[in-house]
Image (cartoon, rainbow, N blue to C red; front, top):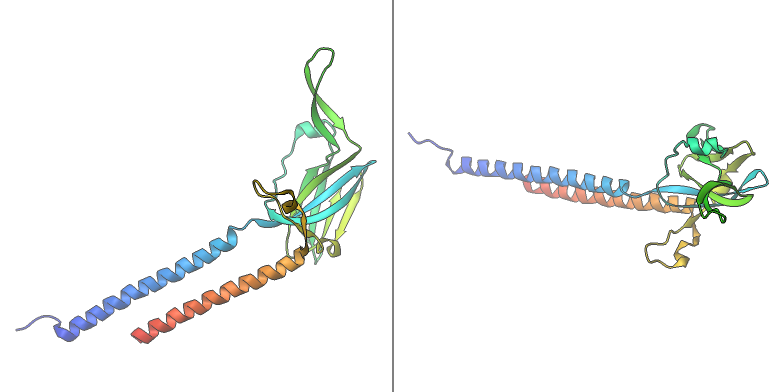
Length: 225
């Protein structure tokens, strides 16, 4: 008695094995595409708002608002700063629905530690130097649902409305060996326009990926039914 699959059986076995291999390759391709797309989206530094603040005559004011890409520094409590009377101010971001969506602190830059040399003894000494007219920066994340920003200090309170925030211009940080003009603002690219560009580019990328996956899927079903 003859045993075995015969020609038809062998062909079916080969076809089944080929389908399995192609299916595995297809699934692996989909997973890699999704991972690549996710990595490309997440690896980009976040959009941050740079507030140039000014301290003068016991009052804080916002001198300038700009944005760039980077990372928001984590506030670290300093007992040395607080023991020397350096003001800690709070900064909050409210949503358009009046909810706090971000909160942090910063030290006002009107008092700074500075080393000096005693001319009579030549000794190096350190101490607090008080400045009356000084600029310093506060950095917060840019959140798309942002409504307004509030700064609270013992000097005074500041509220930054959305109408001012949305006009923030991009500050391009010079790369290593870059020229000075690279750090100037690009007058044609405010924070809202950049949002629109990001959304459009993201939609185009997603659309291309879906179309490409659709083509692969169609080819697969055409070959194997």
